[in-house]
Image (tube, rainbow, N blue to C red; front, side, top):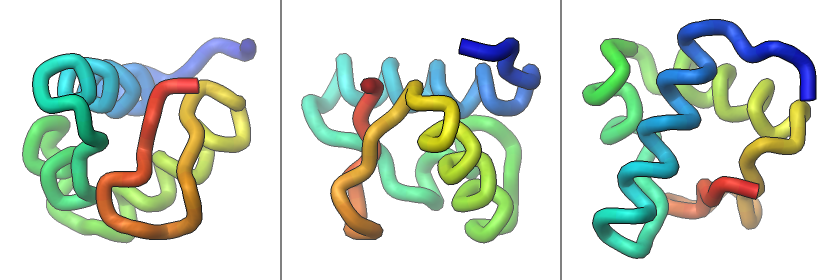
Length: 69
């Protein structure tokens, strides 16, 4: 895996922690609140890049579909 930016590392850590605590993936808004991104499209962009890197998997574009790969 290539080096991830600090922002992407934070998003990935948020997803991992959320899944560990709740058993379900976080929503885009929940991720944004935790990592300091106010725009859902900014979070969606980061999720797309993480998916391209292969560090998360999403089942479609449904809510709570993010999982660490």
